[in-house]
Amino acid sequence: MMRKYAPGDREKIKHLYRDALFLEPTFSCYLDKHYKPFVYEEDGEIIGVIMLQQDYLMLDVFNLYVDSDHRRKGIGRILLSFAEEYARKKELHGVKVETSKDNKEAQDFYLKCGYRKVGEVKNYRVKDGISIFFWKGSPESDLFLSHCFGKE
Image 1 (cartoon, helix red, strand yellow):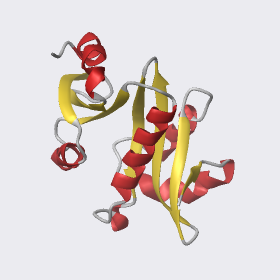
Image 2 (cartoon, helix red, strand yellow; image 1 turned 180 degrees about the vertical axis):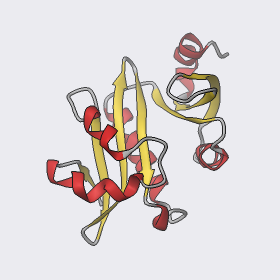
Image 3 (cartoon, rainbow, N blue to C red; image 1 turned 45 degrees about the vertical axis):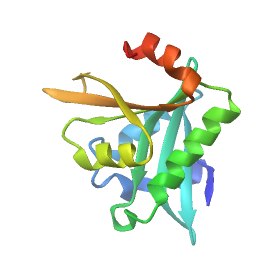
């Protein structure tokens, strides 16, 4: 079940970050009015989290984590579908996700979910790292996409 993040969830989500690039404590600095965190829960256990940020006319998936013991069960797709529906309701052009160039598993996942690679930049958070951006939007979002990412 998808639901909004609640303050009491902080302790319940720490396990999600054990395999993450960013340590769990950094999550708290994003819990403000600009970021919208949601969790996926089964039988009282939080096994997924997604953090959304509206960036002008697009939705940025800032964080998406699924507990490593629950991966490949469709939970990541549920989280992304939730983000896509959120963007539709807000009448945004589409959804942007980012991952590292080294994270082939995430790249394959986004492609399988219908996202397309739209660019890459140096990742200032990781030494010598490269971030890859993926996009999913309506056909009429291509003009917006070309403006943001320089793509046709």
